[in-house]
Length: 496
Image 1 (cartoon, helix red, strand yellow):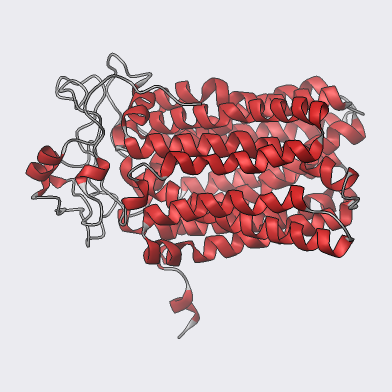
Image 2: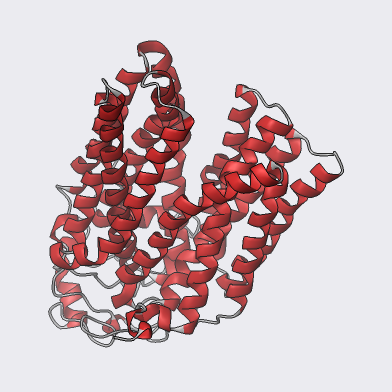
């Protein structure tokens, strides 16, 4: 077989290849900034613990504050790609301002705070647009393959980014190392200018437009389960990671070098997970692969508070924990992201993405604060037991849901347009239709046009604005009963 034949099919397609290259390079740049920005605060500006806390808060806060509004605004824009290009260029300028200020001896903590907040806000805008651009570029039958490629790049960035960042900080200085991240944003923008997919048309302004994405999540049993599971993992995982470095260095006695090796093993596990996610989903089905991913993501981390004894034993347990968890994280991310990409209607995509980010990212600072309080009150190891065991509670959301019964990627409902006189909500439905209605549109659940067994193009993919109700199919492996929301009884209350 020649080399070209070994290249994944999606990477042989120019538009997706350029999109993937831009994403991959930008992910490496993000990892450089993740190291260089706090090092600039500590080494150059001598920030203390409280000031480092403010810097972390400035980076996390925009996802909580702006995701919902960004999704609502983006869904009413005709070209999400242009918004992404502007976001990349603006982030490049903001990041580049830091080494310029350092060169003129003007760098301050206030500038770091403002830059972190502004870059975080633009990242929110970029990400909610990215969800729509992705489905415009990738045929529905290739979602798993595409997410595997992107998550493989993310895992590789976790390996290469910190190493490159450390080298640049050592060679130059922390602020000057940020030039590399600014350059990656420019390259990402350049890649985006060289693609021009057919994007879904913008949604019309209507009553309830702002909260339509949130309401759709709460009324879809599949999205509701994956949202609750992801939020549970985010909360407890941020408890874990807030104390992980302190626990490993102070209680287990590992130095920075050994800690770096442990994290590198985890990143390698991410590469394995991304490479095998496609085969896992084909063998188990998309729903069971998601459940397996959630389990592997959470369970191996129980070995961390269990670790103790001689250094080789400690290292062995930490290696297994990081390797297994990162494999699970990639399988979960690929399967759940593909499932959500297939389910969310185009007319609601940015709003659903924004609502999802608001809810799942909003628990991150809560997890970090909880870890700090419990770590002080009961100690590091007991808190890590709570954080690792608590993450397994995510299974209580997905196991009773329709998720484990979904084998193939479903097709999004084609008639969900918030505020329309003919919306599913106005008729008393909940976003994905009922059994009888779905069968009347699709011939008993067998897809047509862009349904199962056919590789839809971005121009013909079923969805709001891209086809009629008759064009939206349901995969044979996904019963409409599993997909359909419950009978109308008001918004369900969120547990926990």
